[in-house]
Image (cartoon, rainbow, N blue to C red; front, top):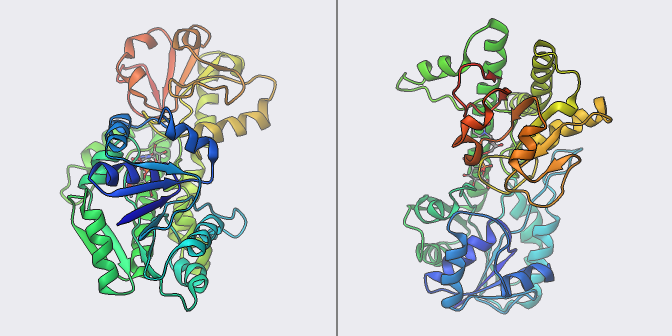
Length: 402
Ligand code: SAJ
């Protein structure tokens, strides 16, 4: 049996490597030739704990990479699913293009698994019509892994597989069971689509609650972290952490699929999105307050620590820091802050420095936008500086918080 994983990104690559290292015959395909060359040579495409060891193991077990689709028994489509900014609906163009290419090459009887996150109904509306009368079996196996702990979660998380018929469901289940030790739950395709989007929406709403609380507590002169810590002692309360905004390509995107498709039924989901999207502006206001208190004249003496969307990953998609920089560019284009992130080695934004000590020695106010371990483990480096810690990772007394 040959499995062709389509899309060698954050999800497709670890999935292909995991299958290969557990003895499955896998070819990873991506239309990006440069990426395929990189995979065929160095293998290093993004930072993730344990990924390079897994890569070596998969290579030993014979994984191959190609920019061409293969004639295979099972296809796993793991391509990005952006959303259309205006209508808030999913843009399924990459999923459709990948499925079309699979259908051009696959034999009858093949199984086409969509792993990309899609809005409920996408398979019925966009993929099923492509198949028409052909005997190609469909399944949806949405991923659940969290960047920063992907490989552990790939093995131990429970997963969902939606399929049209029990035989397809069982075949796909057996494939994932080659490496997945979690429970594998079988259902229909639409329920699998919906449950995935619901999981990320649940988290978005709960982060929004924490973010709203932080604004309330700041206004009321209270410590939101203490309030949350105490409230969380209740056996049925589990409030998440406030932060400078919600980034990444999942939680800040998927709830919009529901808002886009059900605009009149989603006031709560929509409000949560707006609360989370308001956080970079709120951080901006907090920085201004601190600058006034500390007599810091302009933003050129302010440093933003962290460009990624969360700690210890190298992914900057929808990152709160990028959103804050947009706000600053509109308001103070001539006096931009210094920016530093240990995970971003290329020049991505204005005034970016690549060395922590240069960054610290040129700033009077450090705004911790991401709680990377580098700084979290060396809080003494911040001694004598004004610090706005939006992630609650530095525990000295005079640190400002959200
Ligand atoms: N964040 C907070 N406060 C929190 C938790 C997170 O502000 O208490 C922020 C993070 O800093 C980040 C954003 O939210 O900017 C999202 O980060 P995350 O760690 O919550 O999630 P992702 O986007 O890395 O991964 C999520 C996960 N979904 C859920 O936990 C329900 C993961 O399991 C999914 O596989 C992934 O989305 C995906 O690909 O859909």
